[in-house]
Image (cartoon, rainbow, N blue to C red):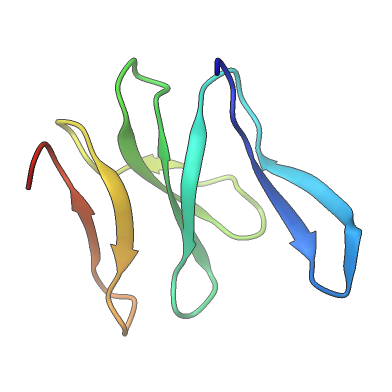
Length: 89
């Protein structure tokens, strides 16, 4: 499993699948913010899994959020906080 990507699909048209996060790395675990403006996801682009956030749907403002490994991103109900697992915590 060298490469996994995140695709966007229109609910009304499953054949509309298109890559949203498509790199040589693994991207997985995508979660929309409550307001639908941001997507948090996990990628191993640095050599280990870290949490990132990017804008939806443009995907131009990619930012690494975790600094010492991260997984399982989860937005707060208001969308003003992002939680993730780091290590065994």
